[in-house]
Image 1 (cartoon, rainbow, N blue to C red):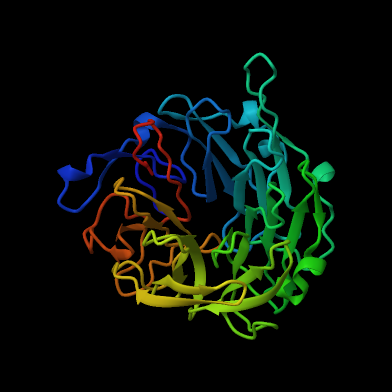
Image 2 (cartoon, rainbow, N blue to C red):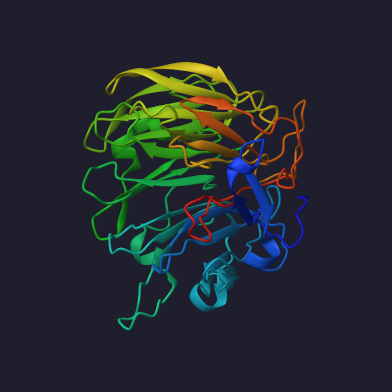
Amino acid sequence: MRHFASHTAALLSLLLLPFWAYSQWVGFTDASSDWLSVGADDQEKDIAVADFNNDGWQDVVVVRKNPFSNPGGQADLLLINTGSTLEDMTAIYAPEFLSNPSDSRDVFAGDLDNDGWTDLVLANTFEDQPIFYHNLGDDGNGDWQGFADVSDDRFPLPLGIFPLQFCAVWGGDVTGDGFLDLYFSNYNPGGLCEDVLLINDGTGHFTDESAARLGNLRNSAFGTSVEIHDMDADGDQDIVKISTLFGVPPWNDNGVYILFNEGDGNFSNWMMVPSSAPYMFTVGDFNRDGLNDLYVVDDSQDYLNIATTVTPDQSITYSTVGASDPRSTGFGGNCKLADIDNDGDLDLGLADVDVDIPPCESGASLRKFTMSRNDGGTLSAPYGNTYHPWNESTFDFGWIDLNNDCYPDL
């Protein structure tokens, strides 16, 4: 199983030191024993970072599941930042994390009812329904009340699809009404399955409008990742997702796909992003030209797709460059962006392990967690093959400014 640095749990809580003091770009110091108050554990699978109690300090939620494809729920974790220290306050502010164990592979944090408090959505697998944890805000006296499960009231449960094995969830306003909608990516080890698009009615209540708005674009085989962004610069939110393992219609291939939003939350046109054997991806404007680009985690060699020209609702042209990091070959995992060195460019963090398998450490250089430096759309590997304490086998990670010094910690 995954190996951990001393006194760490799922996320490696590291203090970011001034980058100018290091010849290899940014340096990190392990501050886990001082900043992380939680027992050691190796079942963490996905991490979300947000200021859940609105006190000005970023907090962390960790969702957990059994290793590989084994059902049997795990209790999730709520770590509250008490001024540079993450403390396990699950029992106090999220007791249903303990009483209602989940089989979650993914978690999305966002304000689903526009009340100013960040809510949570868990993407469950093994035929378990998704979970909506509503942020209860404060009690009027300034005391935070934590999270409550409102799934039965807010979601159209049970969702009428089979199999129901969600691997990913993302929120975005596809209808343009100012409220976050939700997209769940599904998985069928035997072939075709259907994703789910839940539309927000403006009060944080959702209806399943997948068939009407997506048609057969909701089809997936192994839907490992999804994000919602304006990919064609036309002002509406498009859906980007992976379908891999099997070629199911309408894709009939394995790849990363963009579903173009027609402006009203309906989708009919789509395109395949340059990809070979994709497993994860993330979207961001790497070269700051106003167009969204994609970093794709590939089972062979990762690559960066830089958008060059767009025809709204029709097509996007990409320039594809292979990743230079020696730890970017072989099977990889979750990837997330942050301006690590505060130069205005989005840099990359890359986990190496799928949430369902033991550490692969595959590829010529044995994949482990790594970071790539972005300079104007060009990614480099400042650490090369040099081993650092944070080169761990990692299911997931979170960028968090733990001590409010305006530098992202890990």
